[in-house]
Image 1 (spheres, one colour):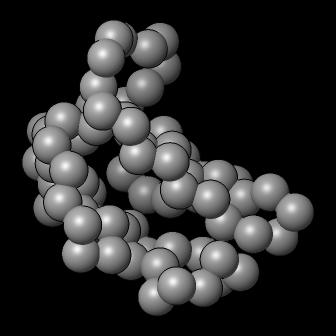
Image 2: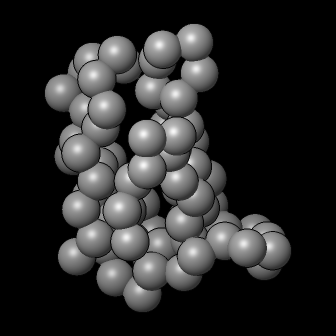
Image 3: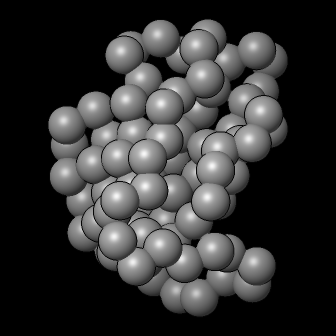
Length: 74
């Protein structure tokens, strides 16, 4: 699994985003108007075509919305 140039969507058992920790969550990362957006929402129901990651997704942005975030699947 990797973050494409357009973004990605995953359901992950754990998420760490710039040091903040979340449990089972849906992660959406996308680019719009040359800025990167990250949405992390608690899991509420199954969504078609969402890739499941049984471990942790670690996201690092360094506070810069114009640079592509670093995403690690652990």
